[in-house]
Length: 107
Image (cartoon, rainbow, N blue to C red; front, side, top):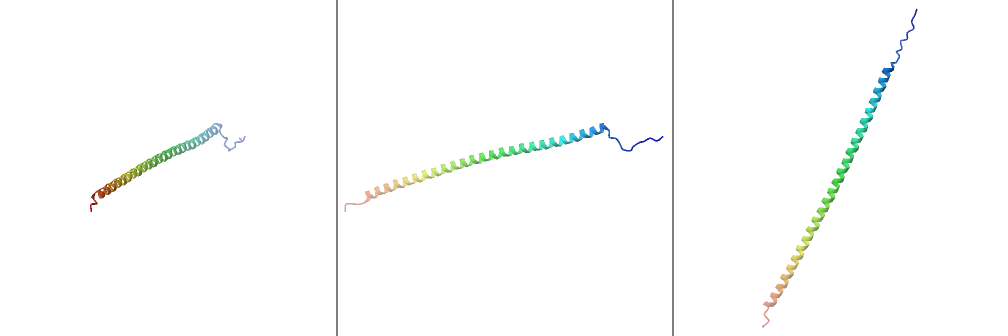
């Protein structure tokens, strides 16, 4: 009597289930890794934008402070020039008064 045996291996349902489970886990890990990487990149981008905004604000504040300092320096220069002009005018008037006193009009 001959036994009809086929050499074709029959798939074991448990093994098939394990392979499928492993494949699903690998796919889930891959998706999680991608999502984590994307979240980290977004977080870094937000931090970079916030840092840029702070730098711009600081630069604006620095520019305003420099402009104020320049304005104050220009005002101080104007005041000094006005005082020098007043002093010169006062000296000129005093000289004119002195010249008028020294002229001998008795001749």
